[in-house]
Image (cartoon, rainbow, N blue to C red):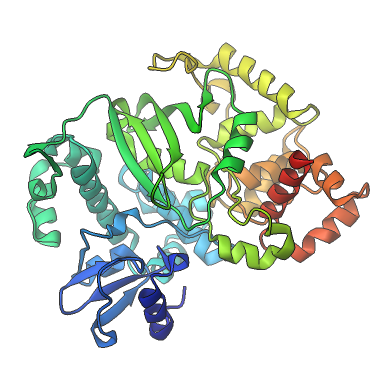
Length: 453
């Protein structure tokens, strides 16, 4: 995003939620940086500096606002190639790949050179990948200190610091506070940790939670996923440093904020960054609905907050897509449940319906195909199409959900054809040209229209 000071300042004065997470404003007189939706009185223009990321503001010497909490800002979906490379690298950094394997490994996964990655990353975030990673660790620690009762020692390691001493020193240096000073207090006592950690993940409104819930609910894999009321729950397995961590998550809509409430089992405390990153991808929290609605026009007018549900696990979505190639949604759900029951791992949870963790790709087949948001689109699609039994519909569906490609377009889908009143796939493909580069969202609107008939 090109930061025009006048445009940014107008968005700041209006507290325009469309710009939340797209830039951060730093105030020279207080040395604090905020989200554009912060409720404090807007500072004078001459005191404002605008940055493309929280990391850029922190590297410039500003500390985060305790009221609007920059660590809660939503991300940014994009179709721009350079931006997607940077966002993919940021996702891998959140998943601890930088710590475990280094920058060269990230560049290799994305099919680019280290130099190109650094250049793309700096253009998007205004900082180097290493500076970004350090800020992400600090902001996660700030969130855990504020929202949970985890001991400081556990927070230090959960945030990715190698020692408590290093964590304390850097936290004080950057934020001019001791970690304990951010502790939320209830009746004078620190919040105690139980079996659950609670978070909020922001989005840019509107967000059509009923439609997203209906989509995920119709495809929920028995034993792995479930809906109860308006809450989505699922089991989770996160691999980190050669170890698998097992647990569960629960997601629901906040009653009074543009955010989703996320509960995470305490067993996943040491792998929170990838857990929260996957929830964001699953629920499409980086979407800018105003941008999508402008491209889709009348098609999006009935449900302007409709999102494209992503994937908590790319392999899981790919398996389900393959199983569903020739059968109805309900039948594919049944097959996916049998697959999980036969090859998955048992798990104990507080919920009787959640009993299985979906199997890993390594257990089912060999290979190193990356099915992650913002992965190299062309290379991944080429490899998917080369697999025996994987057709164009399956490749596009996987791109739509697992790769979070906003312009994915399964134009041979029967539901899309029926919604458009077409039988010729070529004409469906031609019709989709009007919705570029957000055809995946157009597909969701077409599918939704069919379910409403």
